[in-house]
Structure formats: C-alpha cells, structure tokens
Amino acid sequence: MSDEIYKIERKIFGGPKSKDVFTFLKPLNEKGGIEIFYVKETSVSAKEKLQKEAILAIGPIEAKQFDAKKTPQNRKMQNFQINESFFSSTVFKKGFEITKQLTLSAAIFGVLFLALNWSAYVKIFETKYNQVANISQANTMQEFIAPKKPIKQTLLKVGATPAEEKKNIPALSIAVAPPDTRIIIPSINKNIPVIQISDEKLIKKDFKALEADIQKGLEDGVINYPGTSKPGEHGNIVITGHSSYFPWQSGRFKDVFAILSEVKDKDKIAIFYNQKKYIYTVFEITEVSPKDIGPLQQTKDDILTLITCTPVGTDLRRLIVKAKLTSVEI
Image (cartoon, rainbow, N blue to C red; front, side, top):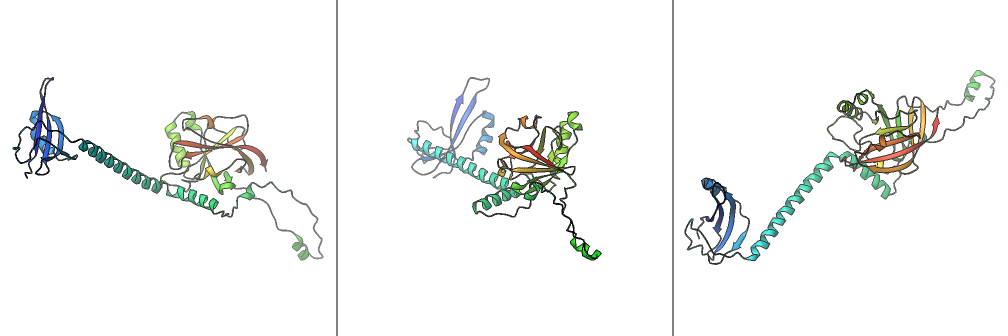
C-alpha cells in the first residue's frame, strides 16, 4: 500500500481571483479505506505550503468506487460515497476531545483556585467539621459582649495591724479596654484591629489612590470604610475585610472574614473605640452585587455594616451583615 497523500481539487470562481479547495486523503488499507488529512481553501500559489501543513487527521472514512492501488499519485478522485458512520464517529471523537479538554481545564483551575485560597478554605473546613462533629471550641470572646456587672461596695475589716489590713484588700478587678479600635465577633471567635482611612482622597475623587490606601490598610486588619460613620458617630459604620486574598501579598488578615457567613441573626458584635464599648445585635444578613452601593449609604439608625467578598476566593458577590446598636459602655 502506498503512503502517498492524494487530493481532491475544486475550483471556486466568483471573485477577482480563482481559489482552489484542497482535500487531502491518505490510503489506510488495500480495500480503499482513506483518511481525511486536511481541508483548506487557499490560493493556487500557496499549494506547496498547504501540502506541508497537511498533518492533522480528523478520522477514518470508507470510500466506494476508489481503489488505493489503482489511484495514481495526484490524480483527481471523483464519485466516491462517504459512509454515514464516519460522521457519527467523527462527531463522537470531537465531542470526546472537547470534553477531555474541558475536564482537564476545570481540574487545573480547581487546583489553582484551591492553592490560592488554601488558608481561607482550611478555616471554612475546620468550622464546618466542628459543627458536624459537635466539637465546641474554647471561645474567649464572649466576655467582651457580656453585660457590665455592677460594682459591689463592701466595707473592709479593720485589722489590728497594717499587715492584717493589707490582707483584707481584694485584688483589683478592672476591665481594660483595648488601646486601639477593635471589632470583636464572638460567634466566629474574631478579635480584629479596625484601621481608619483618611477621607481626603474620597473627597478629591482620587479613587485609584483611595483603593491603594484601602488595600494597604487591609494588610493590618479590617477597614472603617472612608465616607461612612466612625464608632461613636450617628449613622452607618461600614467595616470591610478580606475573605481571601493572594497568598503572596503582605499582611496577616487576608482571610479574616472567611467565615463571616457563620454569623447568625441576633448574634452580638462589639466595637471598642476611645475606651468605650459599643454593642451591636445582628438583624440582617444578605448578599448583593458588587455594584450595589446601598450598604454604604447613611441611615437614620445607628447601625454597623460588615462587608466581604463571596463566594470565598471570588468577588462575584458581597456578603452583608447588618447589626443595630443596642448599648454603649464606658
């Protein structure tokens, strides 16, 4: 059996220049099986180049009225009929190849996505596992949202000597507020610094510089969003933080809000600011489009709004947690 490649040549007229359509065929066996190698429309002058490019086989076919032995090299082949099974097998092969490529691409994407967001998803897995296994973790944050206990005043016993009186003095027990601004979410065991960003760039509408300031601030905690209320002021205090971020970026808070979705209705949240404690109670949990600026708008009530990206590792949506101010302690 010859290994030569045969071709069908068809002239096409109708433009300023005629074109040739070449279909390259290669014999597969002595009975006349052939294989389509390449089909392309080209100018006559590019014939040699086309022959060199004829390297892609798309599937076998069976041809009638064609004998591989008797067909001379470069002879035009006519009047052959293609078996319908060729088309079904070709479609199947093409579909299989496409499916294989899509599956491989999805697997590669999944591995890369998990690698980039590994820390955040480990925290999510640990939280879900503890819930399913009914494992309770020690939560030291509950004391920050507990109501302030009244101070009991009692008279000290007078001792016979100064040494005895000293023994009667109880240990000093005073709750010490954090020196910096912090938000504490006991339900997810989080105690996070709140970073203040200047409103100057927002006022100047220098949004590129503003975004740079925000990203820089997120390396050190969560952000009290510029243009919204500060703790102690009336209106809407907006705080935003990462649910996940690039592992090569600086900062210890790249996934600080990875499990913010675990916060439930009526959960308590505390903010410490200027030695005062502000207690908020969650009343609404929603998701919105990134283009929705509603969560940033001011309100008549004193509320706290927490914002992060969701699903974790994407910026497709925004998770919004709203809480209403219920008490202030000095």
